[in-house]
Image (cartoon, rainbow over all chains, first blue to last red; front, top):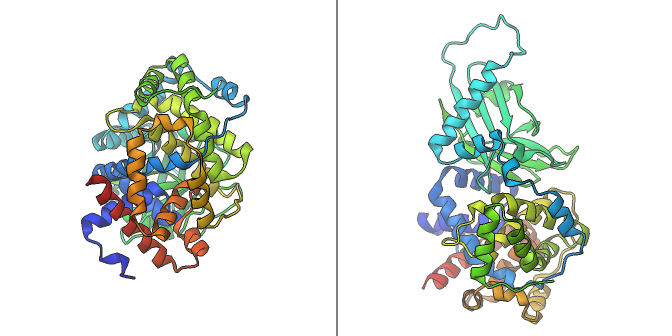
Length: 242
Length: 186
């Protein structure tokens, strides 16, 4: 058997996109590939093309009539389009398009967050070359799931989830996608409301250099290994510098 | 209650769903819910959980239908992708334990399946072409790709089932995918 790594660069991307669409990757590799898809439209298009190519495999699956209870439950969950378009969703959807939009959304979120009262000592001296790193995490559907801002000066991390993550009984966990490959667990986060965290020394370094961030959904009470999510990676986004 | 819609009719109904047309959404549901439950059930192997995921899938479809682009995606494939990804997310959330089926058995089941009414949704030519191209791969590779798609399992699980090293399984599938692409685009 020939070594799988001798495939050319272009084929490498195509194969990775196929693996992501087929969902055969390990959680860590999937997180990295998702982050890539979120940051690289050409790669995302490859993934979409694979979904289209492989979709016919479902043709061999025998249909199973759902019970009569399913439709009423679906119908009960429908929000009228007018109500669904509340201001916050329209805001996020509008900004979720294009990387300039992503950055703008992040800036807006940072401004909102910075305008809130800060629960840290007032006497904190301003560290000199603070850099703000920001990311908008999007779901596979393209909808924005969360905006993140990280202040390299203070080690403070701000998270602003959208309503997309609400109503899931699993616990969202935040990951850094490292430049050398692999992922680093930041920790469990609150998917229902904005939050601030102070990253310790061990995490502030990686958070300053991470290429991207991702969110996995873990079973309640379960803490995954530091370098490998166990639950599915549902959202990811590229880190950018303000 | 599986109403049969052609691909164009389904694309149209999905487009109207994106505009908030509930009657159109109901037509999409009636034409595709049996197919999508088949997909979620094969991955989750538990009827109750598969129906929960199905419900969740259609709520997602309702919210995202305005992003469906008939010029880029087949409507049934678009729906299957959402259902399959939701089911795999649920499977990997750790809340579901699944019994494994050897790959050979899966392939047999598929081959024996009678043509379904939902096949009318997919243009038969596309599916035939995919099957022809898969048939040109060696049996283990074609079987592994089918199993990965239908059961939503990772490289790790596939390697264990086939009793081959992880690197071998990755090599089979990566090369298989690239050959499949060349064949489909030729």
